[in-house]
Length: 325
Image (cartoon, rainbow, N blue to C red; front, side, top):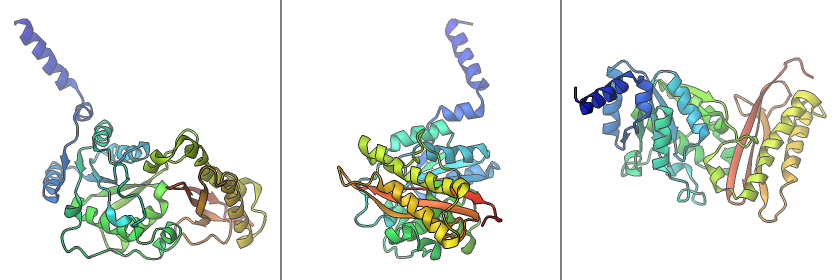
């Protein structure tokens, strides 16, 4: 055997010895941008006995997104990630045009996480000419973020329904950071009899506690430091509920916690160089999003603040003993 043949044989043996996962991670996942191509790929996967796991995103992928992809990958399913900046969930004054679009980096991140297929439709694919149908969510969308982003959850519900119809996944993964969105999607799937299981994965945080978000990239160094007020406020409320008491009973006790959280944000809310403003700080029932009336059961502390032009949201879930007074 001549040296070149020996080298080629060794190379082939090396490739053959790679695990399927290692091989997949070395290749950029295919990208399709039409429903026809998408369905062909998914049909091929199903014909080989694979179940379909789906992670819908708007791109600008970070560790939070990757945690969803890894959860899908760990299930052993064929993993589909959509990257689509959905225009119907943005109000006219919001950051649609400025929203980060980083497809090359996103594709590399998907490769490293083991994604099988990326779907990148354009607006015409998702909203064909003459489009007029919308999915209108119910009361879950009429509180918290719904009060400050009119039409947002209708846009989310509509595009997720379209994506579910296109991908037809067995399971879809969402993040707890967007807790209201996850509850709305779970309710929508049940109400509309969509045969998909919804998995909600924990929030991924920076080492200092800031929740991962694509919008964190908008923050200056000074704004990034001030942004921690939201997480600190939620932690203050959590500690009051778990350890130090609420300073009252029933509604008054919960309101005392809300005031304390608002005060934590207010400490960094001076107008120089840019103000930190509160959209809401609240303690709600973790399933219904109705205001908590007693510090018992599973509750969610949630808040939204604006730092300059950037809006950030976060939440904490806690379980309080039913025998508390």
